[in-house]
Amino acid sequence: MDFKDYYALLGVSESATAEEIKKAYRKLARKYHPDVSKEADADARFKEVGEAYEVLKDPEKRAEYDELRKYGQRGPGGFEPPPDWQSRSHFGGGGYTEADAQHFSEFFEQIFGGGRASGGFQRQHGHRMRGEDIHARLALFLEEAFAGCEKQVQFTTHEPDPQGRLPPRMKTLKVKIPAGVRDGQHIRLKGQGAPGFGQGEPGDLFIEIELAPHPLFTLDGHNIQLTVPITPSEAILGATITVPTLAGKVNVKVPKGANSGQKLRLKGKGLPGKHPGDQIVVLQVVVPPTQSPETEALYAQLAKLESSFNPRMKLGV
Image (cartoon, rainbow, N blue to C red; front, side, top):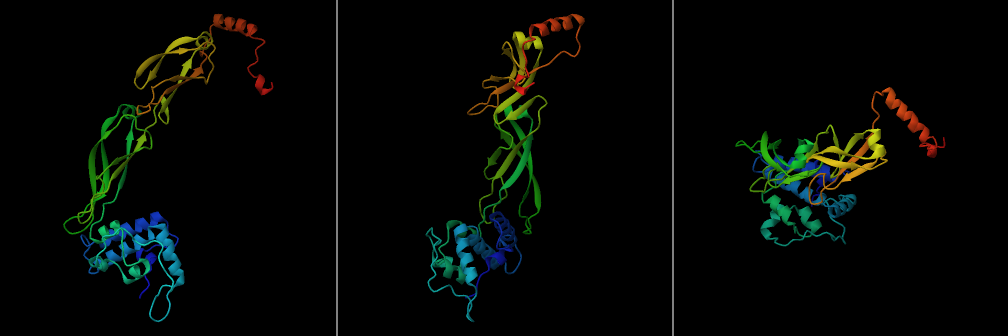
């Protein structure tokens, strides 16, 4: 029996990551899929790469295979597993018939218990393969994320043409964006990815939301933050001021003796959703750029009244 080097069949190293193995398999499966390939040995190669991927994609099966690989090729008759060898990870799932045996190599059947393949493996070798998932990005303004909107998404997919080739094709899709989406959130559109082969189901489209910076508001999860300037008199005496929110202007009470950096919470004024966020108003005391002689005189009187107050006491000065 010939030893099957599954790593070589996929063109990856023994230290390849799961993602690298998956990527190599998808590339070769598309290359040799009988629905599109014109190569004479396409069917055999397609089965080989499918068998290799079925073993290497699963950590437990891969570990067993690596053990056998160390055991190596023995004797003039080719590879033979150790006398006491028994797979710990039989391919279960039932539904295996004699007709399915042609899909597996002798090596596979000898090592993993008679070719009892998982449902996914049988589907691949029945010349049906699920289409690839596609990832796209969609840039939104914060106002669009807050209110929800309808946008057009453009992405590149590969669809087989009558000659069996897989040319890239630009696809445009109209998408409804729900209110309250966050930066980095993924929206899944089932069945809108690349088409499958041989009646295989299509992949999915994953849209990653990318929010453009806003001139006023910043985001912290579902919460929205806004820095609001106030005058020294508003900070000392307290006041009712008008501040913007994404839902419109609202009145906010500034407490007496407010300080720069103090935060006021506007409940439910953040991004909408099952658990709506809040708007956090950060106060910033701003001194007028010019002072009249009368104003300076009043500040001088205030300084005398506050001569015993040292705001830098905690600094040790």
